[in-house]
Image (cartoon, rainbow, N blue to C red; front, side, top):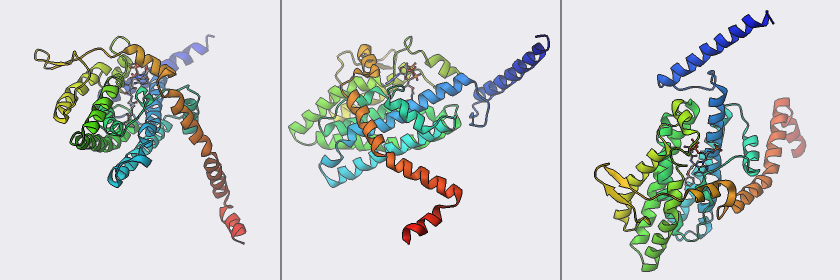
Length: 332
Ligand code: FAQ
């Protein structure tokens, strides 16, 4: 015991120095890189958030993806196809960023499919009409951009760099959604009614997307101290409302909140309280489409098993220098 003490003291002073170095990097607005020392809890928080974010992009392909084969024109079909493919790409950037923290994408996918990791509540709502495609672009990508632009300055380098690319593409997604809705609002009475109906259904879930309010958000304070998050969920929600109200007016739709009004004292909009019970229900798995989304993801994963197996065998053969020999054998 007597001998162990100095060693322990040394270790803790070494850890203290590492911790001080980490804090100094964060506070000086430098990025933490994969090679840098970081506290275990910082690593775990990033893995949790980046994995949830990646899963959201991948599950988020489903609600709009359902409309690719039914898009009304070739132009709309091409735009939608490109958007959904971008979402797959965003998921992959994010899984790659998570992998720099020492986790494996396969392990994250298993956790998603087994319901052990979350994805955004917003993707558990149905898309019964083509107006939903426009509203997802306008409101859901709009909310995602509000949340993600500050993440371009998040303290972990690979996540921040992934966010810069993702935000650029999402700005385009948001515009295509708004342009689609503008076109529908200039169309028939039925088309205008479909847009209003979609706005009525997506408005509150879009506000919930930002997460629980202050006081019920267990991770915010620590994530802000580490500069992973730059704003509270409520600050970002307010920013989204203020940004969206003039766009709704220009579009000619009504936002379904009787308490929504400009407050000149705060120089911001007052708005009603989202149904937080609904958010928790959806996050727990009881939303309108949770079971369907996970079943679809599981089926797609299973259908891809042979691709992963073939890639693994090919990689092993290449590593062993036998891939060419085998191809010759096949050709023969
Ligand atoms: N849904 O303490 P907080 C997109 C969970 S990408 C489900 O406030 P935190 C692109 C939270 O994880 C959309 N779960 O947590 C696209 C935590 O659970 P845990 C995704 C939610 O992390 C567009 C617990 O509640 N974007 O849309 C939700 O500090 C169109 C307590 O909450 C991101 O992921 C929710 N809405 O703040 C694709 C952005 N809200 O893990 C297709 C990055 C909260 O403790 C079409 N993430 N929870 O068990 C973030 O900014 C943060 O993680 C928050 C949550 C703000 C989502």
